[in-house]
Image (cartoon, rainbow, N blue to C red; front, side):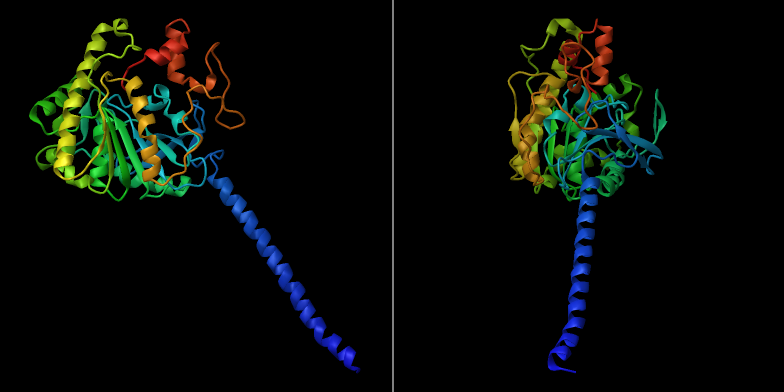
Length: 396
């Protein structure tokens, strides 16, 4: 065999090996690309997650069913997936009424458009009427029946597991916010689970719950709105353990934002539309202001400096709370290291092409800014949806 033929014979196996390696590399590259695309699709906000349907609120909001073993029932949760692959979550808690169909934050404050372009998943738990989002010591016996209330367990353990598995939300990179009763619940959750929540916000919350006068007021509200009993919720040491003011030191490593207005009516609100109700929300806000400033003082005594906002005008309503959520948005995104979108939409920003979008169904009002509850209220008021949206101050 000639030298050249021997060299060719030697080269051919190496050539075959090179071709084989190249083919394998190409296949691996294609597989990686496919896997990457699949992962991206699973993390896209255009994708429905297990147990979810598209919500009528649009803005990519899904309505999901999450089972709670602690409460032995399914809990409805409205979820707006992050605009990207971020792992941060924002839990937004409602007030005393605890609606099960749709959060007041979505129906009246339009929170779904405030963070729509941001890389953070928004979570709106439904239900929990009069629960203060805590674990009750005893079953709740009220006009709504006997219920096991273990909301702290659900929000700190069961729901985070679902969010991590289906929305990619980290159990340790979250913020929590709430209004009224939800403000109290948000503060207690942050105090009890500092590794879960990096940032906490209370809007018009009641933050000195062990104060005897405040406790009497809460007890009266609970009894008067369905026969809920405060003695089934907290007794003994647990009263102090669920008073944010008494647990001020627990917020040392948490970004804290608190707000409460004076109770003076805003010019844009119609006081005379319902004077009795107007007086009640003025008083509720004034009480919140007192307890919020007490909480601020307790924090500063611990060397903790919260971000505060005390508007000169504002009552216990959604006009006030929407403004506060907009104000705190940058802090939430910063604390959770989430990428911000293009800014806060004005509420009538149209959406196109997404599975959750919908067209206007009422003349003169964009469909993507009208909740089902607003449409129902509008039907009862002659179809004036805009007035129903702007003038509704019912706590939900």
